[in-house]
Length: 209
Ligand SMILES: Nc1ncnc2c1ncn2[C@@H]1O[C@H](COP(=O)(O)OP(=O)(O)OP(=O)(O)O)[C@@H](O)[C@H]1O
Image (cartoon, rainbow, N blue to C red; front, side, top):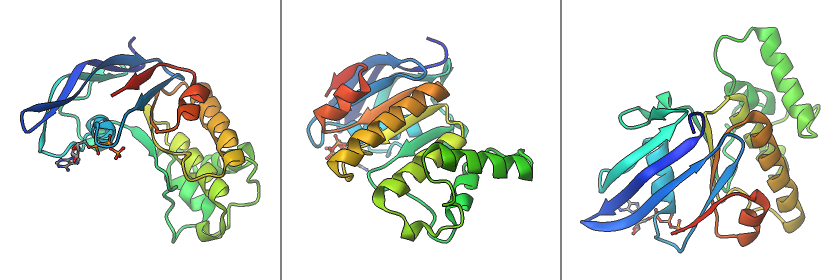
């Protein structure tokens, strides 16, 4: 699979003990779910993909993204998007400026304004551009964080328990939105979760560490 994310016989060890071993791949627009008890290495695998694995770990195998081995590529050259439990928005920037921050360089000003406006409309936040992120509800902030990440056109999207802090109703909505948008953008998704319902909603392969 040349344009997805592939773990080719990846192992991670710490202090001479194997923490995990993964062989799997996820196609653009699909979701690979990673589940497992606390300490089983889920965040460590995300760090390996991001390119910021702590030096305490040793790895073997290859992580391949869009046909390219990620080994040796610095984090900023990997173009990975990530969403956390808490939406990370810059508090000193407006909602619109937060979204524009995700845009690749080179777009004209008019084009940037247009992309931001469309992104806000797309997630029912038309008119929210001038707002201070601190004034958003949890669900609204989560939608802005999603769109900011997608506007940066990531090569892969990592989800680190992104729905766990949302109320039940909102959680369903947000799951649908994230998986729909990832599919539309044809971005491969790697999701870490403790919630079986997340895995079910994602509908793809589940790896249990
Ligand atoms: N920076 C680090 N240096 C050394 N060991 C670490 C580091 N970060 C995590 N570990 C250890 O690596 C193992 C895997 O941790 P990791 O955070 O990947 O687990 P996890 O499955 O994400 O857990 P949780 O569900 O609690 O977030 C644990 O034993 C942890 O103590």
